[in-house]
Amino acid sequence: MGQTKEQLLDILGQFQLEDKVTDVKPFGDGHINETLKTIDEQGNSKYILQHINHAIFTDVELLQNNIHAVTTHIRKKLEAAGEKEIDRKVLTFLPTKDGKSYYFDGDSYWRVCLYIAGSQTIDELNVHSAYEAGKAFGNFQSMLADIPDGVLGETIPNFHNMEFRLQQFNDALQANAAGRLEEVQDLVAEINKRAEAMCIQEKLYREGTLKKRINHCDTKVNNILFDKDGNVLCVIDLDTVMPGFVLSDIGDFIRTGCNTGAEDDENLDNVKVNTEIFETYARGYMETAKDFLTPQEIKLLPYGGRLLTYMQTVRFLTDYLNGDTYYKIHSPKHNLQRTRAQFKLLQELEAKASEMDAIIAQF
Image 1 (tube, rainbow, N blue to C red):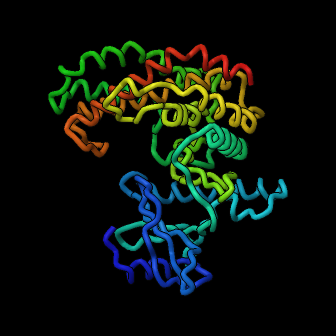
Image 2 (cartoon, rainbow, N blue to C red):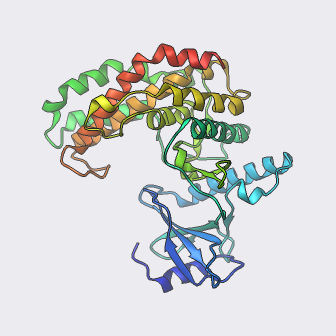
């Protein structure tokens, strides 16, 4: 980021803040945007300052309009439900002094939201946190289910579009830019074998039998704020909230939360499916999301896990073929290692498909 403390305080001064800020400190460990927490004269924190990653979110106006629409909609739902402490149940973003939702300093884009005191994130999943996460993300989708079409745009176009990801993959095969195609022929064959079956959602959408919903698109448990007693406060990290298919959200949770290994595990024997975590997440999710889902969507939920895992397999291998131009790598074959670990998870999910279908069916 490179800004001095004085420059950061000047940026904060462009927003409509109620309290004086005397210092800023790095906060959290997000991979996309850089985040700082403000400090006042008493040593308390009231605001969060974020540097928006303009390289990924190229249309900041659309991004911020999405976030404003989502938080405003959720706030109205909470008010109608008689919720107390609403500022702890939804993020509150502050306007600049000229009324904009972000500030551009000539080089970088910035935004400010209220810090929710006493909140925390968690990284380790257990049965309780999986259930609470399922309820939180299901409730999040449910509250946004009636946002009219066209209000939100795609902050990352084609983010979870499998046909688009396969086109990128095929382009990488044709170019073979890094000269690595020969060593991954086995993986290419496995991807191609499943390609048609993994484009079901786009096909059903064109046929008019699967509708687009508003999704979070990054449903990791650390994108939920909990209070000190472990109760859910609100869903955070709203940059990827956009229209898509419900399979994206439960699918990405299955891919990340139900994997007993690491995303890039070198020991593929570590990579299994924790069906207990899946069942507890699904129970929580269905409690809050069932009323707006169609029978077809419910039936396809476990398929979402296979789809998002397949998609990530394709994306890692595409980047490896292209010479590692997208994902940060820690070794020359890191993307290949990621690909093989994700493909192993896909195989494990395929083996558990009937069991996971039966879990969803009971709800």
